Amino acid sequence: MKVRALALVLACSASLFASKEDVVKRLNAATDVFNDIMKTPDKGIPKEILERAHCIVLVPDMKKGGFIVGAKYGKGFMTCKEGASWSAPSAIKIEGGSFGAQIGAGEVDVVLVVMNETGAEKLMRSEFTLGGDAGAMAGPVGRDASAQTDALMHAQILSYSRSRGLFAGATLTGSTLRSDDKDNEYLYGKPVEHKAILTGHVTKPAEAAPLYSALNRYSVTRATGTSRARKP
Image 1: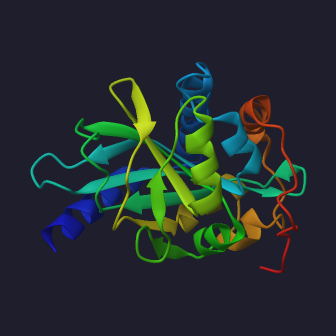
Image 2: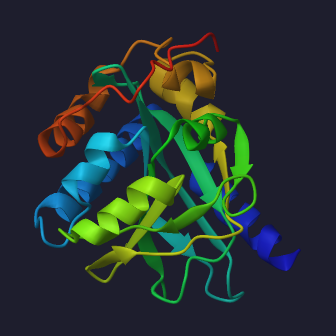
């Protein structure tokens, strides 16, 4: 309960003076995180993983509470493939849970890569729990073909983290990810539903152009079997 309470305090502090400008800055920060991670192919997310991904979640500067171990809170964005392109980004927030021993700093960047239709459907809910509603495993890094094959065959969600410049696969369990409806309202100028954004029913904002450029630079966007442009 104390961990949950601290996460709520961190959440309230982060959103107290929020505005569209703040949301766009966070979107740009998420793009920068992805670009930084992918600059070195031998240490980034394997290209084949990104090509086969259904969705990606980017959370820059996830914060860890200093006085209660395990309290964490972050805000970021999620986008999913719709045919040969990426959907508009939906703002999300993530809190609590265990992120593995690698994350020990005060702030950490978190990346989730959703590998199949089942995982994508779960992330399109307004709220879900990693390790409970959806299984997540540490993702492979670099050009390890055997690790990529295992990940492609078995994982719903691959999880990564970057702390103090070190980027690696990381285990995530018990963390709650939910849509950030207020930030989406700031970004789109009106209330919009999380699933409607991710299934192509919301016009892509101009502010997301750098994110699309980054994603397309490092992955040839393939159709992932069937289109997910469903009714919200």
